Structures are given as C-alpha cells and as structure tokens.
Amino acid sequence: MTGRRPRIGLLGGSFNPAHRGHRRVSLFAQRALGLDEVWWLVSPGNPLKPSSDMAPLEARFASAVRQARVAPIRVTAIERQLGTRYTIDTLRELCRRYARYEFVWLMGADNLAQFHRWREWRDIARTMPIAVIARPGYDDAVVASPAMAWLRRYRVPLASFVNGGAWSAPALVTLRFDPDPRSATAIRRADPDWAARFAGPPPRDQLTHRRIVAGEETTAP
Ligand SMILES: Nc1ncnc2c1ncn2[C@@H]1O[C@H](COP(=O)(O)OP(=O)(O)OP(=O)(O)O)[C@@H](O)[C@H]1O
Ligand SMILES: O=C(O)c1ccc[n+]([C@@H]2O[C@H](COP(=O)([O-])O)[C@@H](O)[C@H]2O)c1
Image (cartoon, rainbow, N blue to C red; front, side, top):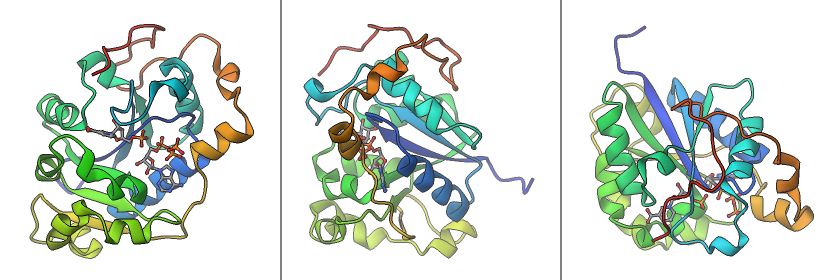
C-alpha cells in the first residue's frame, strides 16, 4: 500500500441490460486510473429516460452481476436504499458514508454530451473528478456540448491525475482506447426478451449485502 486512500471508480447506469462493453470500459478505466475497484451503480431509474422501456431493477441488477464476474467490480443498487435518483444526491451521500475512499465518476462520452441536462451538473464536477471514456460516434457531440464548454478548462492529463499531480475537483480526464461499439440499445433490439433470462431469485447487493427485492422502487420524480 502507498498510504493513499483507496480509489474507487463509480459507473452509474441503467444497465438495461449490462453488456461486455460496460465490463471492458470499467476494466480499462481501472487500469488507466489506478483504481482499486469500480462500483456499478444500477439506477432505479434514470431521471431523463422513459420508464416504459426499462426492465425491472432486479433483472438489470442480475445482468450486471453476471457481467461483473471475477473482476474488481462491485454491483450495487444503493440508490434504491438511499432513495436518491439524481446523481448529485447519490454522490453527496456516498462521500459522506464512505469518507475513507476517494471517488472518481466514470461515464461514457454519450453521457458527457448531455451532462448539462443533469441536475446540478457543475456541483457533480465539484464533488469528484470525472473520467470520460470515448464512445464511437460521440466525439463531435462532446466537443459541441455545453458541459464541455465549461469543463474544458479543468482538463487534467492522465499522467498527472494518476501520479498525484496538483489538481483538485473539478477535474476532467479523458480516456481514449480502442472504443467499444456495444450498447444496451442494440441488445434490446436483437433480444427484446432478455430480462426473462434473469427471472430467478435476485442476487445480493455487493455493497450493502441486501437482497434486491422486487417492487421496492423509490418514487419516480
Ligand atoms: N460501449 C461503451 N463505451 C463507453 N462507455 C459505455 C459503453 N457502454 C456503456 N457505457 C457507459 O456506461 C454507463 C452506463 O451505460 P448504460 O447502462 O446506459 O448502457 P448503454 O449501452 O449506454 O445503454 P443504452 O443503449 O440503453 O443507452 C454510461 O456512462 C455509458 O456512457
Ligand atoms: O442526476 C441527473 O440529473 C441524471 C440525469 C441522467 C442520468 N443520470 C445518471 O447517469 C447514469 C447513466 O445513466 P444511463 O441511463 O445513461 O445508463 C445513471 O447513474 C443515471 O442515474 C443522472
């Protein structure tokens, strides 16, 4: 151990369903940023996505557990327990509960392109550093995005981020690697009944150790 606080990457998502792309980008980010673990926050419901197309949380959670097997990835639906939907509320609560960890918010470039629509998005960036993973087809949208217009000035080179250079949040690190074309949209199109394969008893939350129980949703905003 170097004496530094364990560094955890947080990848929030619908995971509707989880796919190999989530796993690949998480492991890539873990290596590139020197993370001890990546936590997948399986969302009870993205505030900007219609719930009509969303499989039940238990199925999405179970698909994530399967994709995260034998990897330094923990799958949690802690937002349901916390009663949070908006990322800013979740991150504030995680920082309070897990003060011994240092967090990095991970997201694909598609999310950065519409980050300015998230509640208190600048405060999210002030709460923890953000690492963005390139995603095929989103480069232009990111460059032109209102969030990038503000975040650009806080860019930190990967090397200084990893080696403890002089930075503090807001900080934006861009991760570029062989981009992964997979998406949950494509999987749902090819296999609309994917959730039926995860109909068994739901696995336990890997952070809170609670059983994921059907129907315990937080109220949609
Ligand atoms: N192939 C990928 N490359 C980079 N980031 C990804 C990739 N797939 C998912 N992500 C990121 O993982 C997080 C969770 O993604 P999500 O669960 O919405 O999957 P998705 O494939 O983007 O789903 P959908 O197609 O339904 O929008 C988001 O930050 C998203 O940008
Ligand atoms: O907080 C917000 O306003 C907000 C708006 C849209 C998305 N998010 C979060 O973004 C993450 C990615 O969502 P998704 O559906 O693109 O996988 C997930 O953790 C959502 O809760 C958060």
